[in-house]
Image 1 (tube, rainbow over the protein chains, first blue to last red):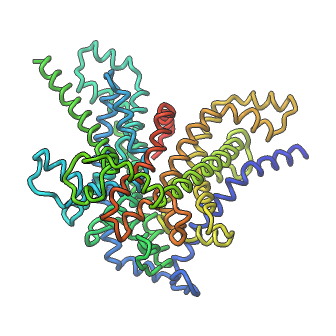
Image 2: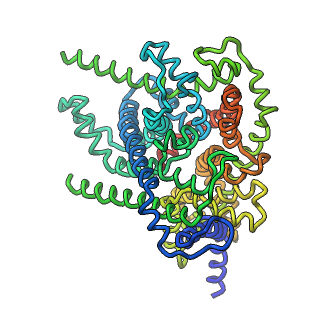
Image 3: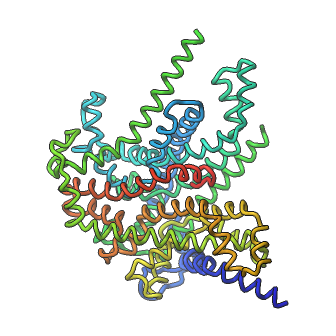
Length: 299
Length: 279
């Protein structure tokens, strides 16, 4: 009996730091949100219970739904560019290639740099008037006039390109790990049978990579829906809200984007928005999970 | 014909690989050259290389723009977060891997959902209130504790490493009269060193690069700001246009330590990303 209690005591002391921290700073904030989404609460004074009013407001909040649409454009654009490029890089680097180690190192560098820091850099080099992107493009005679990268027409493309820049190396590495799990003798016997390189790619590499790719794509979807830090630093959601994704919209309900700029804190409504964003991300992830399982069965 | 397509294929492949490498390095190169130009040069733009290398920019950023303070704060936060995360996650992972106890699957489920639920910035408010209640909002410990509390990915990473250490080792130690905690700290933890090294790299990188959390917590307390926050404030500052050269120097100061860590630990970085599949 005492042995059992001793073991239990040991378990408790080893787990308690993790449990206390997770409960206080991970779970409690979620419960806090689930409560205040039914309140009118500005962050000071007495919170007022208003039932579902915040959700009615959410339904009618055009700015929020626009930001949801922008989130899909941003995430979709990021995925459409990141996934094929990183997969191609992984396939090329997986072959016996001179300098593969060096190239892999170069492609991986963006993933160790702070999103915030490099976003400040991108903000300056995409500047239409004195930014280095226009300078280089004009020196190479690729464009005749400076492009207004942060203007209404190109701002979304710019923030997508920045996101792709930061993500490619990471997904390349994950794909590379998947590729290295494919048995080499499959390729050898295919070569003996006279299969061409593209044939081997379609008939061996891609099908064998499917399980890993499924997981990697899911991670990529979640990450691309969640990102807003670099947008905040490059365009602040502008111009005229063109790049305001839903998590940035939420942030602006709670905190000033730059120190000093005024913000009317809306913690009650912000809680409702936070809940809605989690539901949207959860629904998309769940949908993808179901679809990819169906696809699995088809093969 | 066959040979021709092969040559064409290789050319396209190399063009793609090299173009991607150039585009990857471009902003980093621009940061480096920008940090060595004068403020006026940056403002007018149009030049590729600095007319004269302005190493004084670094001294200016370090002293006048307060980057010495920011660097110290970043280093302090990152080191504490790394140690704390590893300790908390390793202890939990050890018990979860070696023992059965009531609520184990609930614990694992909560940790897993912590990685997937994302409600954005709203959690910062209750977290802040918590730190005010503990009187930690005027120190960096609030930021540190919150970063440590997000240890679920480290937990799962270490769980994998624990599985590779045979249970017979624990049992042998116990038979020799070593207690549970002693066995863990003296025998198992040293064996976990490679796993702790790579998980630590990730924790350090995450803390060093974190922006929104320290931003919100230090808005009214410039003395506590980290490199990311201090740098971003330059961008929002009234004289931002005249300080681009300082921004670039500051960015270099922030990137360099991670780059050095990366070059030293290149192999393990790549191994773990490959092994753990982290978003």
